[in-house]
Length: 305
Image 1 (cartoon, helix red, strand yellow):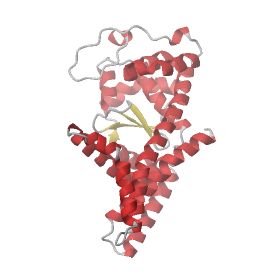
Image 2 (spheres, helix red, strand yellow):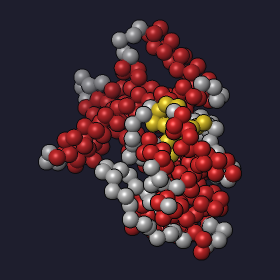
Image 3 (cartoon, rainbow, N blue to C red):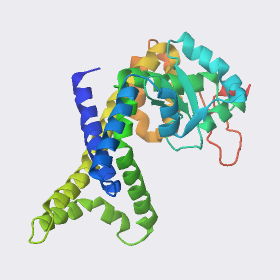
Image 4 (cartoon, rainbow, N blue to C red):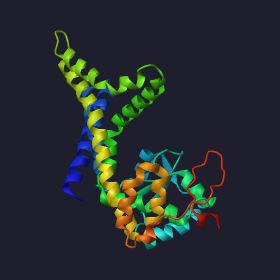
């Protein structure tokens, strides 16, 4: 992976880890100094264990809210796993998320673990998806894992976990109050809160440390997500190339068009250019999707045979 990509990833991981440590210190403020030191050393020890590749299975289940495949799910995935194995894009471990998520159908976590969304397995079983469709999603996750710095992924998630919880809760609150006048606008102007907190911290009777810490957290809420989006875009481009060169360009294009609609034009162009045989990478025409209430449908004509 290019050095620039690693630096982008550091800009996303390091601030989130520092913010997570700060949030943890505040949350554990009731502990004596010895307790805080013990908690820090314990977190450091666990992160070293995760960085060495140990305990990945339970850690991936915890951070990904996932579980192992049930016998029926494993049976439905057998043709797909055989296909990704043939393409040298097989994951070391496959888990399934406890509840459906709006994210990608397959998400990499750790060094060699991929978490599947339940609707992906259900779509295979109900023949709304082909093995090539599911293999494209899993293969793309594995390719992203190989491109990105996956060695310290779980350790970074551990340090950033308190900050992640705070960020998610804050975003959910912002979405809940977004119906109120200027609710979403207030979230986007949170930088004003940071500036005011820093200013008040240096006023008579203020707490400079708390003011600076608040300003840093607000700054991180801008820097870390932006760096993470940039890093994911770079990894996505390289993973698209790997999957397209593996012969799954057609399914990948169909998937991208389904997920991104008209915004997928440039990405589809890159995928077609990366495919070994350009005509073969042209997506097939869509067949009418079976009407399943509330279901996510990615339909190929071959899936309905």
